[in-house]
Length: 353
Image (cartoon, rainbow, N blue to C red):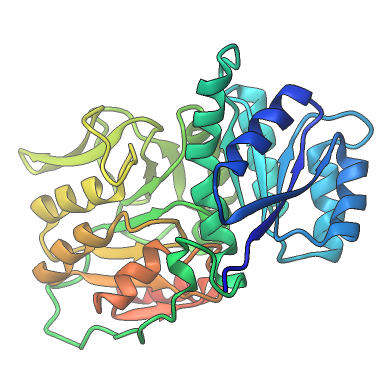
């Protein structure tokens, strides 16, 4: 028997509420059980309706989305909350604040809601997969929800001859990644001794602000990568939104090459692009870490690096917001260790010491 996913839609705009409810109504496994016009109503509706997931606007009267999120988290720490954001500097900052307060994920509002059909399609394509990924494990059998199927056991990759001390740390993440990075990078020492390359699925501007926030708390230097940047030990370079990040080696110097080639795994930047190019430059002398994220981006790149002798680590399911990306790597038998997020910094430091 199919259990439908119950959604509460929160937005002060009647047009946006209409777009969201119409988009969700097209999915047979989703049911909009209520709407709220501000944060006060949202908190009340969560208590009254017990939804499986909440979509939350940020800027609202009486109580904004950040305030409502804080109140909801106090009583419902694991309820998935997806924020609606604008592609502006203010919207990016508010979204990152929301993610740091426990928001599960975010979607960007359509830039032009003049054409209703286009707005509905844009919301549906972003929102429905996220709802299914975030709620799938909590429901008995949501239609089309792969996460609801009983998982095969994780196979830890066997110990093997090392390709040598890693010369680079590669990190891939998506849903839940900004918070995971905020908890992981500050616990890596300034003496790490290798460069760090990160792909986090985020739009342009969001990655710029994410890098700035991470740099404030980390001992390592964190910044958004630019085309032609030299890859240096002690620096964390984050792929900019809407650009693939590749590595190129010339005259003994590894540099960043950015491009807007076709999306891979529906993503740009894509983790697989970085991982494959790193295999060409470093071979097996790489330490790969796959953190929380929806989908399977990073799986094939991790396979290439693992075959070359690289060490692969994955975040465990219990500490992942969505165990899509690390789960794919883990169940493929590519990870030497599948660990809680809080154990990964020490494991990374140990592998690089």
